[in-house]
Image (cartoon, rainbow over all chains, first blue to last red; front, side, top):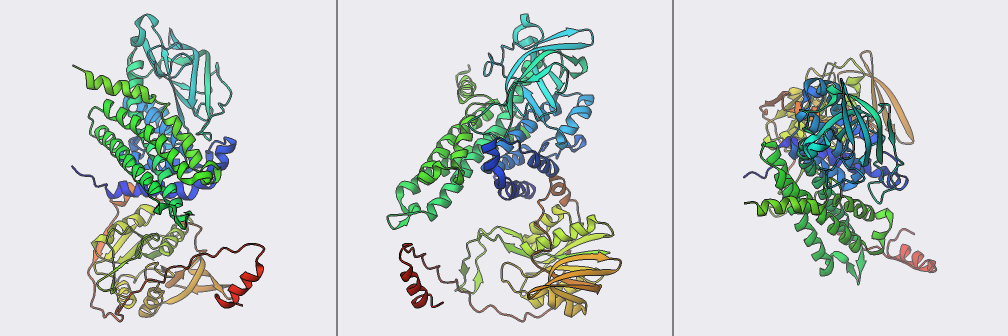
Length: 380
Length: 245
């Protein structure tokens, strides 16, 4: 077993760290407060190769492995989880979905600009009545001659307004239940698409989230991904890989909060000494460090399995459930170590805590991950 | 036109400094190594000049053992075209300059950071120019190329100086030479392994310095807080303790 990172992986980690600590940090608080989309940063990160990290260079990607992706996600998320969620959706849901299951024409037309980061993508699965329960899709895709007609509503869509390319999951044959579901590439400016208002979120406020309404939206047949009825399987396979991205995001929120808490504990004095010298604080930091190390190992293991084409269902569910839950614990404790200062925006940890909450909810709640994990434990 | 950028392999600037061997050498256990920040800015400026056109190639070079190669490969990832490593420990400034003089011939512009952030020697660039008998300018905060001339901006006391110099030139660069170091793009990181990193044998050269002893600076005195009503106390402390009044 080799735990050593390659020189390239270390360079990517450092590049992500440099960008986060030098650039993202500058306007992260203002973007959070005013819910401003990080347009400049997404453009810069695209130029550095972060928007299509794992896509084959033939289609405009960087050709990196999933380990590198975990390292980059952690470093960027230490500072700004809004930027990293936009990156994660683009990389591990949209680009990955098209890389793995798109045909040659779809890759040329849609994947290449997405991987280069010239445009960004959104993944439309959740519905008002179906989030975790993805088998019940009320959005319909009726087959007509050479096209499909989409009707319905999708909820909680990350980058709904800023994305140009949507991947939409919809029901074609309701009687076949989840075997009648299809996945489509839909251009956002297609007639009949309208957006709900910008969601006013607790955290990740610099990423735009909307509901998306489809009214008789015409989608050419060649935009269906895979065989007829492949949509549910497609969504499940993409989501289980996507969990590695969100797990790494949660990991970054936790390790970013610990870095800040440790630095603060070495500066802040009470009772005549730095608070790091009080065991109550030092032990909190020790607990954080162990949790973070565990989460990191789970993320890297899941990434390694994916890079080696081995099953990742359970590994990615474990990584996401654990990393998200400890991100909530660690960020909360980081606020506690900061005391009153932790509760004001200047010290960043309150924002990391707000952002950590979402990692337990989106791309499969912690409870859904536990269903996946427990089914594996209990299987005959 | 060809540019050579001299690269020092130095400990990360946040490294906790310790010494070993009875305080006679730097303890490099667990140290993370980086491109000397001034050299990184020099490389950035070299890249900008290349992008403006007329530069055939950028070479980076250092004197160091194999362990310093990741630092050179980072420079290749940022955008240098090839690298030369002179296979010897960087003993002292004269030794390093003597080695570099062997490979520096043929370059029109040689950029050296004003000092390396490890020993702050501030000597290699000047020595190299002397050995090669090239023009050299220190404290360079801007450089441009006009035809076969270099237009060099230099900070002087109370203002700045503009010089018009013929090459080959050793420019010893400082703050202002480039805005900030570049972050390598992934394409560059992947290409770095395919770019040539040539290893040259060292020549015989004398060391002229010997490190006798290192000492850490005394710990910073604690900050004294004084009540805002108590102005007299500040004056007393500034006078009697700090002795600045």
